[in-house]
Structure formats: structure tokens, C-alpha cells
Length: 106
Image (cartoon, rainbow, N blue to C red):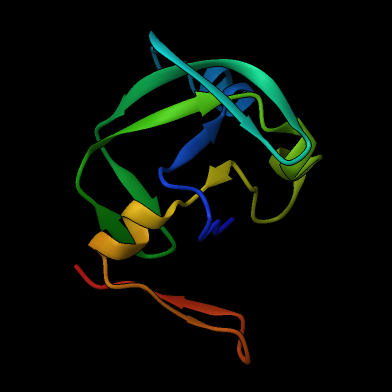
């Protein structure tokens, strides 16, 4: 899911647990619409793919996004997190609302 208002990219904690990705606590808390304030954890992702595009590894936030993505892990394709503005900017994102397409550059 794309969230142009989110400064960073976040993964849903249930997805991170399911994938057995290790996390570390951070000193930051996070709060958002339909998401109660909670401690932000961090995960080092060695390979992040969005559609056919592979992105270099990055450090992303991990929180419980159940209030935002609801049953997203069971959707097809699954919704596992929020792609934030930093990642969108770094990859020169173009959002085409007419075709519901996201274009990213390497």
C-alpha cells in the first residue's frame, strides 16, 4: 500500500513474524490514523521487491498495522505494509491514478 503522507516505509508486524525477520526495538513511538501509539521496531531488509522491481536492502519500521490494512495479509496480492514518501522519492515514483499504477525507477 502506498502512503504518501508517511515519512518512512513500514511493515506490518504480523508479516514480519510470519517471515521470521528479526527486529530491534527503537527509541521511537509511532501513531497514525486507526493505529494506536506503539513502540516502533526496526528491521533490516536485505531484499525488498515491489512487483517486478527489486530494491536494495533498507532499514524499515515495523508496527502493528491491523487498523490500516485489516485483512491485507490474506488479500491477493497480500498487503504487507506501507510504502512511505522517502522510498517513493528515492525511486522517483509516479502514481497514475487513472490506471491505478505505480512506476518506480532504479
